[in-house]
Image (cartoon, rainbow, N blue to C red; front, side, top):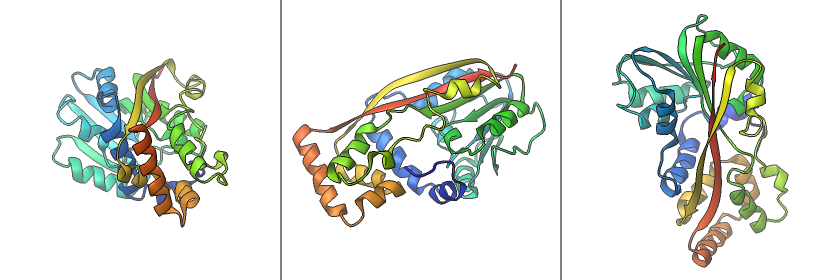
Length: 266
């Protein structure tokens, strides 16, 4: 799947929202569980009164776009991402929201003073950070005492059936080439957070994909360099392979393993 912590890889993948949008579309249109995980995470934070939230790895702002009108207006949202292009998309989508700001920020060197934020969020991004302990020290530093940290991530078996489909179609593709990164997963994230935070807990969301259309799945595959390489020159044949799979089984069924950690600054 490529080295997810390689900065040049990450910058190229997430220069803007196009690759991410193809992936989000697949989950939005074909997930079995109708509960939006962004809603569930915000609900779990139980924000009230006023305060400041720092989001690291905001992408094009989907967390706040999905939660538009659902967070207390007394809260200031500071949405950040390593990619200036992503931040620009988030700000463009949410510029009308009161007390919303964006900035290009590296999670390993957060440019805010100690104890600035009541909440820090790092959803589906810690596996991209080369020096996670350094980033976690920074997150702890900018949280106020008792402040809350939430970090969403994936499980080791997330979307394994999509990898298996490509290997079935092209058996010369090493399965390890497409394997899920193990940098920060539901299975190992708690141990990484425990040295820096108290009350570390994990919440898993049961879900799956039932994919009934070819084009969104092909767009998902094309959004990943490793899949593009595995399918290069055989895209038409692979499209027919997927068409046949859906026709034979009614849908392509794929297990999702997503969840999030919550923790507190001591």
